[in-house]
Amino acid sequence: MVEKIKFSCYFPTTWDTDDAVDETYEHWNLLVDAWVRDGAIPILGGDFNACVGSPCQFDETEHLGRCGAGQKKTRGDMLATWVVQHGFQIMNRMGGPELAEEN
Image 1: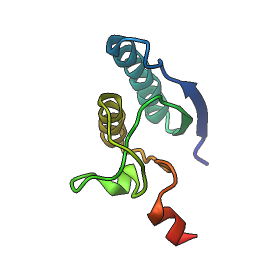
Image 2: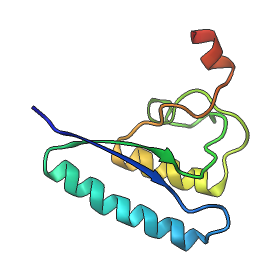
Image 3: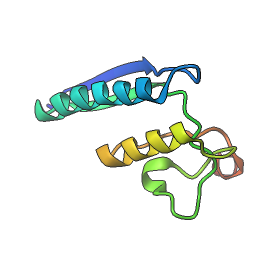
Image 4: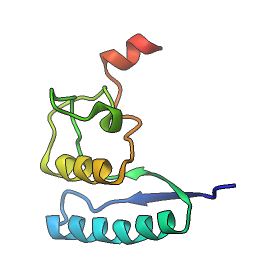
């Protein structure tokens, strides 16, 4: 049986520097790499303090979802890049019309 690692986090806020966010992603890289190397399936949840925004034409919707609101910000780009690099999925970008149609 594969072990599932569940972890929650709160990322640096908008008042923190992008360097602090980069450092947090570096720590997450170490944790995720170690978990995967040990055969675990990481499940992450938390407030990443990033606006991924509405889906764009070239978004990888299988990783980033089809629903969202607002415009993608710099930290949203950072999160989206990290998610795609690790093969994760953002399960909810916020409620939107496409989500409402599916319910």
